[in-house]
Amino acid sequence: MPAALSRRDFALLLFVCVVWALNFLMSALGLREIPPFTFTLLRFVVLLLALAAFMRVPPRDQWPRLAIVSLLVGVVHFGLSFLALRLSGDLSSPAIVMQSYIPMTTLLAWWWLGERFKWWTGLAIAVSFMGVMVIGFDPHVLSRPAALITMLISALALAIGTILMKGLRGIDMPNQQGWMAAASVVPLLGISLWLEPGALATLPGVSATAWAGVAYAALASSLLGHGLYYSLVQRYPVALMMPWLLLVPVIAVALGIVFWGDRPGTRIWIGGAMVLGGVLIIALRQRFKSRTQQPVTEVVAEYPQG
Image 1: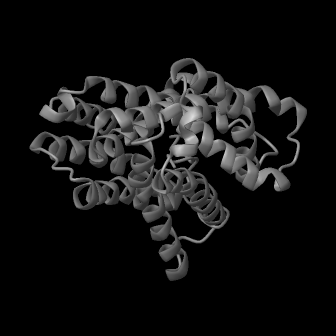
Image 2: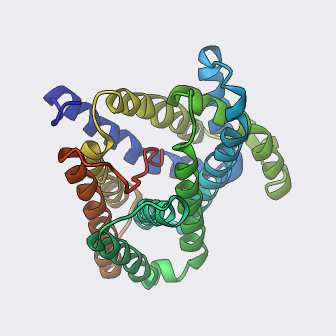
């Protein structure tokens, strides 16, 4: 694989970062009128309709793992991440805390798969989690602890799902997305009816802005964003692109300040720098190992939130 991104592909990667970052803002707009699990349900319905014609039946032996991954990522991760975004009232803290799924994934790979990492990776993991604690003591975040806890659980579900994804065989990313949507619709419908009664009945009165949020999450963030990212993964090592993906929370914070009225406090700035700094060290370690062509043992999630 090439050792560096071409100018065209670097521009595409930056575009993907902007698309994924904008998803925080567009989803927040939709969540003002649509409850989170109903929003997640609608997102997957739209995505399923867009991908249905291109889906292929996965190998039979992959069905159980695919079903578990779909529930973890499609239902738990996305459902709880949208819930956390609605509970938080801002874009900055959820966008940063979500990145904790990367050190979580590395730790799970060590514990679950026996994969080793060097001491500086362990230090980076510790710094990232300490950064989350610092963010947790920000007055705004501290006033809404449920949002922080919910986003951490969402990140953990994504980390576990990422580990399990690495065992999937014979299923490309577009098919993964399609079958994840298919497997998530019924559970999300049940959760919506149970926890958000009456939400479906209010949909005819939902504004165009809220529907734009649903459409953006499904078609722009998932279909376009992941489609472009998948095409880049076919040509470049994930480790080469991973550091640049840290622009997603940075851009999301900027969008929150400009368009959502976020005013991140000192603890969010410091904690955010610690979280992203730790994640950057993990990503750069992966990139170094990729360049030296040594066996890559440290897992870095290949399915960023979007």
